[in-house]
Every structure is written in structure tokens, then in C-alpha cells.
Image (cartoon, rainbow, N blue to C red; front, side):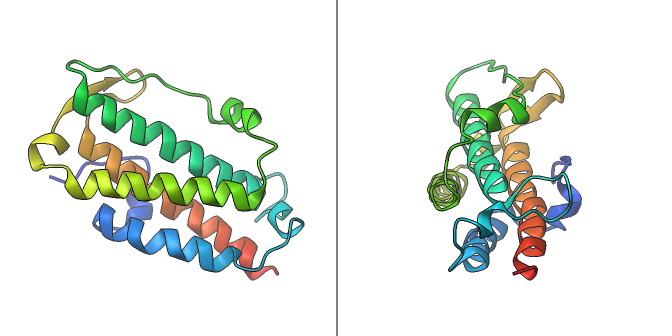
Length: 161
């Protein structure tokens, strides 16, 4: 059974691994040739810039990948919630290209983890303080849908060049 996440609609029924393999190079194609100023554009007034979106994507890969690894290796694991805005402040000096590199590196690691996870590993349950009982497979679906959600925002920014 396919898990339902806050980003299920963004994933549109795609297999998470297939989606990740599509999204990561698409993000690279969007930002190819951008200068520092281009990374500071936003898709709407008051919303994150492209650089901030890339930082957030890298941080999300880090956090969700860590959750999957912890759940797969620690019995009765309980995930910790994190405040994405507070996290963003911590890495706010990261450049757009460096944030992209961090995102792609972490996404490749998480894709490898996903592609090599057995059905039993994907079915491992853990607790989350906001979402309750989840599975590792939920994380993979959340991660892929989250990427697509922010891909749409980066595409809007790219259209404005």
C-alpha cells in the first residue's frame, strides 16, 4: 500500500526512485548558468529565494535520509521534529551552487539507500511526534514528493530569467 504524505499530490503516483532520478537533473538544468544574483530571485513576493530553496532541499535530504537510516538501524526509533525556518538560518550563508551540490550529493545517497532497501526495511515502523506511526517507505515517498513540490517553485523562478 502506498503511504500518504503531505506531498502525495506532488508525487502524482510516481515511484519515489523514478521521481528522484528525474528531479535532481531537472533542478541542475534549471540553474545551469545562473549567477549569484539569479539565485536570489523568488517565485513570489515574500517567498524563499532559489538559493534558500536549494538550502532547504539539501537540509531536507539530510534530515529525512537520517530518519530513514535511524529507523532502519535503531529498534523503536522515535524521530525528532525540526523547524525548517530555524534550520535555514543556520546555513543562510551557503551559496546557491554549494547548496545545489549539497542537495545533489545527499539526494544521490538517499536514492542509493532507497534502491537498496528491502521490502522489509521499507516496512520498518518508527514514531514521529507530529505524524504518529510511520514507515521508512513513508519517508521515501515524502522525500520524493517534497522534491517535486519545490521543483515547481524553482521552475517558476527559472521561467523569469
